[in-house]
Length: 220
Image 1 (tube, rainbow, N blue to C red):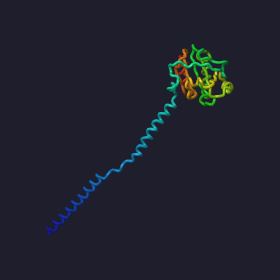
Image 2: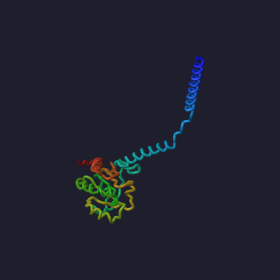
Image 3: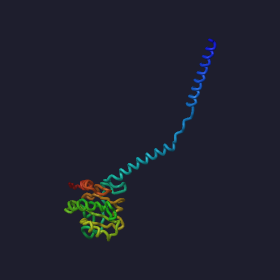
Image 4: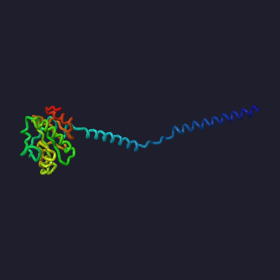
């Protein structure tokens, strides 16, 4: 009877040893099994999309914010404003305007077009500002157009009751000299003919105050 018990115990021990061996073998097999390679293409694609999203966000931020300086190729702040002589085709005045003749007082150059919605939106504001301050001699305001037929400038000025000179830029030479790549663009030039600030956006009361302040004119 005792021998039978010893034999049963031995068989149980052998069985346990075999099971333990199987477990060890399975564990070693699992450890040595090659890992499933990551989908590198998917990872790279996600990284690329993330980078594109960041640059798109930065681009949107910088393009939506008003710019107080011209583009790298434009007339830099602190440089002498290119001179010109342009004919008056609408608004107030007649004949032509020579920028050099306006030395001694600040000049605001507003590049516009009647087909430009932001230009049309800001014109009543420009007229109000000019009527309140510029018409008394504090500064000269000139609207320069080269995108429209010159015959359209006079009726456009009457429709908007513009009293500052609206000039025509034949051939776009002045636009090229000031490197105007988007409209409206407004240059603020001091009494010595030096560019002091530029806004490539529709002017607001804040940007108008900032621009005029840069040429020495403070308005509330």
